[in-house]
Length: 335
Image 1 (cartoon, rainbow, N blue to C red):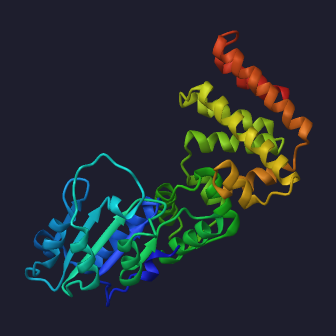
Image 2: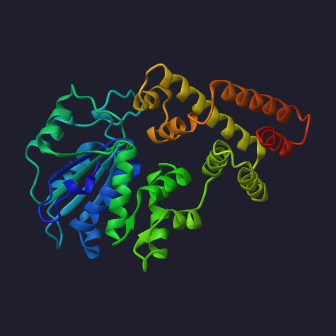
Image 3: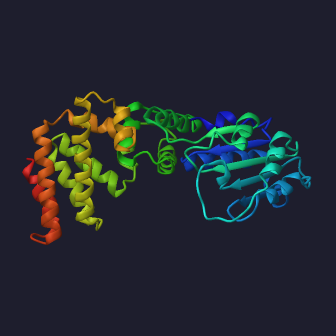
């Protein structure tokens, strides 16, 4: 979802409702509003944030009604509007929701009120939700699918006058995953390196991208899938040099091969990749990758690999052999 398209720098909405679980998009949108509404010297007297778990909404509304000081606008941000959801809570703050309803229908021209709701869904039955959907600019920050993330990466590159190719994006997602905060950090680093060539390619991604333990192990699994066992060993030994714990590595390897096996089985039953992602509660990109990897193995091979990993887990936890040797033996068995 392109949240920036809903923010007009010349004509702001008096009320914004940002909701969803993708915190990066919510924070990015909030920062865009903040940067474009007030100058730095106007912030002290014209910007406030309220936690509605601690203060009633009418306190924020009173602040919103106050005339701005040496500025055209006031900016008020409120967090945790639990009264917009079905969520049950022990928090005892009582809110004057009738006052909020009146505000929504007749907001002051001098104030921009931003409501941040880090929830997947709002209670559509409630009058407040209906009023906000009618009168506010509503921005849903939902988890992006593979296509959306690639569109977002292309925009990140274009904003820096750069181009990133499809293979480079695929490789970046393989190494980093789909965490937008981490992707933003890596894109900033790649942009600095590519400022002369104006091109981010796969080689640049491979050379510069930082790898988490999970993504390093995903790379190791991909080398196993490609039957590049020597490269898998190299990744494993690099992780040992970084003092990564073998039992964690084995758990991630086993999790990935289970995903490959489950994806292969569900595809055979006629499930789409989108349905598989929803059923297994994993990101669609991981299912897309697993589906591609599943084609390199028969069901018998995958079942054998999972048995080897289960046996390795037992040996590692019982101390029958040194932990470092368990993954070595697993990789040797695949040669």
